Image 1: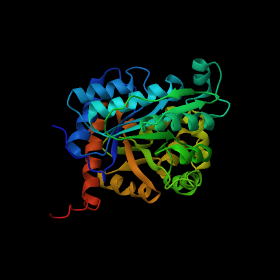
Image 2: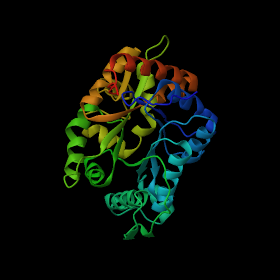
Image 3: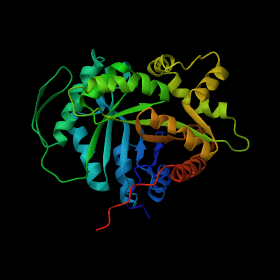
Length: 337
């Protein structure tokens, strides 16, 4: 049975791989339901499409708040993106974060004919269009990458927040202009506090408030036979090969050297890009992200999931969520009538 009221104090859980079938994600959805985790997040998948997986899970009875971190702009028109997001809110009966990112230039060129000359313009136009459509407004846009004239048919549904994938200050400023949520991966607390949050606030200077921040944090508990350095490299390995992630980590002072895996693993652990330890120690280490301005932490068990499988990853997350519940202040009490 799913929990009727997710606990906003608790982290969210992230299934960080591309699932072959919704059943692979079901243990994560069940955990989100029984633990009161804030949300279940999925990444872009080119196997089972994430919106359909989340809708399938809701049909199985896992009606929990959900998020996409992130789906890629070239795959769908902003109208289709808004339609998919609100459909998820309708079928789950829960709030949704619809997160979007641009993808790498080669991927964009393969779908649209050429890379975005200005990724920030593409994101600004896309997110502002999706937000306007979800708000019931009519859109008239003739942009360099997207055109939209019209609106969605009226429909009552749970709230949908529009998110932007953010790694570096330029995109953070754009997210500050148009996004409800800035979604970050592998961003150390000091980099969030000193670089990304100020850029978000700068971009939001014409708005009532800056976007809230949701950050995916790699976690793995220490257990007999586990090597934290191996888990750190397994968790971050594919992202370390991407130039934009490597650049962000270097800006954040995290030494990333493809010829020195031991040094890279040590840097990932020391700079809190990957958190290891007991459940209590990991829960306490997450506080650095909250102090840096993160509103929603996504627990990302990639290292354990890749090396030991779904059930070991879920066991880690369950212990961490329980530890967070013990150490976080209790939620405010409803006033007595």
